[in-house]
Image (tube, rainbow over all chains, first blue to last red; front, top):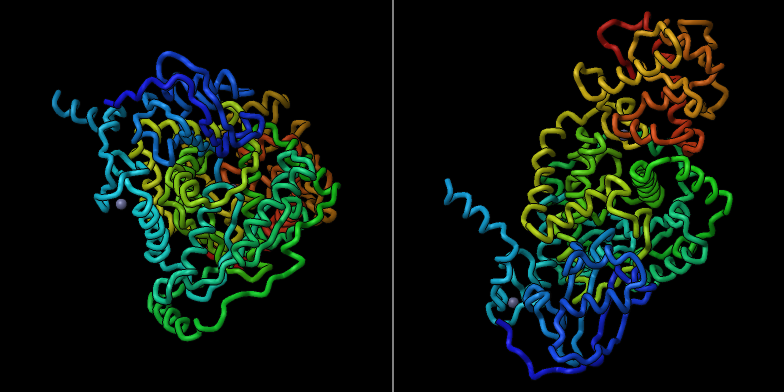
Length: 107
Length: 513
Ligand SMILES: [Zn+2]
Ligand SMILES: [Zn+2]
């Protein structure tokens, strides 16, 4: 369904933005991350695991649930709803911009 | 049958959502950026148009806000209320005939004191909000929640009849306004109010005692909502605003609706979740964001850089089961993710309830709950959950006290933790000498033991079923703000007086005044 890009080995400068969810990340809202190289291209599913292992400081259950993000956390990839991008199967590219917005306790 | 079932599942299966088209369904040209509901994909431009139109349509169709009227926007700093603020700004910048024609002001209630934030954290959040508010050019007010301690008891007393404007009045008001529209509508900024107010530490402590005296998070959140509402209404009154605009969105209202049912607020559902809420009489609250889901708002705010300020609340970072409100929120959020259309079904239920309740809500002020100001739903009705609770409460108390001879169903709080009295002007419960003054013979016992002061039972009798439950979770009522206690005292003495003169009143017209 989604075209495989030429094997991206090491993806640098993925921009992560966490709106309303930054409390879980030590209050840091914006992260520029470099993902380690791997033989397969990185997809969103792997990114979530990586975030959980490397960035999440506390209470992972408030950010992820199962393989995906917790209900109530919206994801935008390059400013488009990730539902349009294949959600967990989306394959990351250089300079991608990934935004997580928590809609919980927004008033 | 089998066929029907399959179709049903097809509609709801979340996996089907991936088949959405990648083009905007409106202009059919630009590539889609946002998925609002299954299959509803919009490009940025069309999404913005759709959003703005929806906001204006909501205000337009309800015709509750009159041209030139002063409207106070309650902005918590969260995405929903900040989005509302930006929509009002947007509406005021439109050209003549599409322009919103009311005069907005902003109020922010700083709840940091109740939530346990340090003064520094509070100042920091307020400074951020100040930047946002200043950019709008609207007058704005910062009100610390501690101010509830100084509220006048009129907040929970008066229920001036809402002025009913006939439909024609709206039209003529619009015409009148168009003529004077050329004059600038900027209100001079009140410098004192726009600065961040100082809060006395003793007040914060008192507020914290009040919050801490409530044992469950569910009741705390409920009480906090009530106090906030009182403060908003009072601010609107003292600053001369006649409408209050709240940022409740569809998701939040769905949560509120389900929570209300769980908290025994069934009778107040319509007012709690409808578009407009007139329980405070002269100040009418409106909820123009009620057609928007949190998802739409979050996307709009992000894509069009609407600033919001994140302020942790009572339930931030707690577990799902910490409170009923929180549990309901995660339930509704999960519904929204898996079955997006069901959430709007929940909140539309509230629209259907509205008309049914409206007609019967013309109660006189003494028949309104002391806290939430809704019509009292505690009139004795056999076989209601309320009566059942009272009976079982009484039975358990009977065993506790030994053989009590009381038979009348009146909640009596004779146990220690609830023994606290209203700190009201020296009570004179028994002053008129013995049983008569206390209403009835059955009450004599209570009255005697409370030594000349109205008791907790008296506060409770002025509350609706749900607020009674909240109060029940408080370890002591003496922490309640003075305005609540003194209004309780006023109502108590009034009903007592009525009792005393009852034999001189005509039988059928039971309540004069
Ligand atoms: Zn479009
Ligand atoms: Zn109530």
